[in-house]
Image 1 (cartoon, one colour):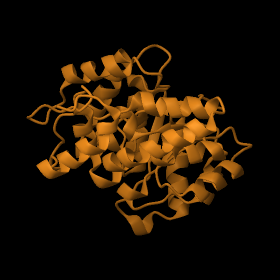
Image 2 (spheres, one colour):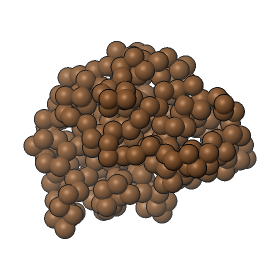
Image 3 (cartoon, one colour):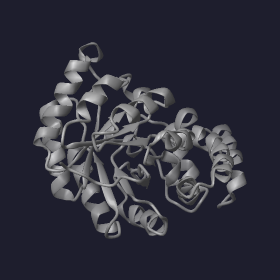
Length: 300
């Protein structure tokens, strides 16, 4: 049975582009010099916030290889290897393993939505896990894919020896609790896919979080993890309340352009998004700046 301890916080890192929309590896290195000072358990490369849907296959693999070079020893790398076709996902997973990934984060296929029945999804993930040289983490992100991986499907897949976890970004806390309960005997872990419901997920048995906000407020998100770990629930509750608005801003409200812009308030490089995503308008940037003002940073 494959096993990794996924406890803790994993930022789904953004892909830094230059003005010509090519990957800016110098800025990538600069961001890591700051992230590596934080108590992250590892990094997610080519998740939704990495604009993976707009990346060429060779770019995705190169980014995994670069993160392996930049991340300190002992930090885990979860690489987004999901493709629409099962055979492509298998190939991408293998290549990312060779590039240094410790686990594959596999998103639900979604283009043919009517065909993505529970049976089809179980078949897809089973074939990927059977072939993968590294453990597989299921990834449900219905806001982007329109596919909410069914609880019963997750429960069945949790018994596969090479499927070790779920990253759930849907935010249905009752589903998260049910999955944790029903998979308790399968050496299966659940990661909250957002800082907005991180504490609630912890209270139900989740072990960690993959949180977009950790790109910006990594210390604060890691602090929430530590407060819960040490039973300081009142402090954890207050911090969770404080993180909901900025997290919503960089996910539901302004998305990746907002996440990248907010990083720049704190001395990170966000840079442009890759087209067709558009940059924020001045009014949106002003609103975002106001939301993050309470956390300090580079506000001028």
